[in-house]
Length: 147
Image (tube, rainbow, N blue to C red; front, side, top):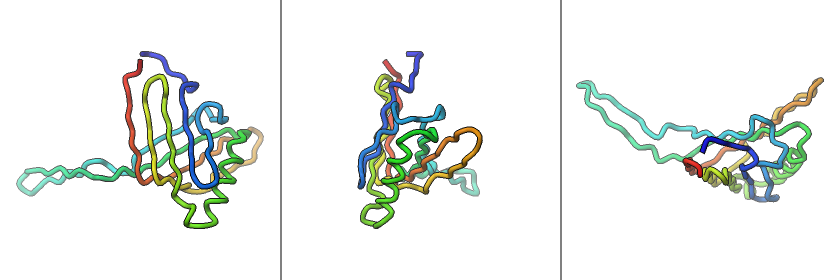
């Protein structure tokens, strides 16, 4: 398949304080969302004699960035969720983020997700983009070949 559309992209965050759509229909900026693993899966060590060793890192930790237009109502929903969750450690880091491209079959499943920080916000002549950053303890990813 040689086509792609953000309209096929679904993403939600669910946790204490609600469940919010972050994909198509959320007022996403054209830059959309980014999923990034924070550690390499492998550590290679080369010995003095030139022999080598690879070590498999069990970490699945990652970062997620969701970019929304300044005028998106989703900013208010995320702001309320952030405020609620930051009132108690019992509410912190309990989110789940699920994302998929339903046509291509690609999926991300993220557990133990917390807000990284409140987004920076600029008031200027043109409306800006708010970037919501999340940390996740466990991120599973599956890319696909599409239909």
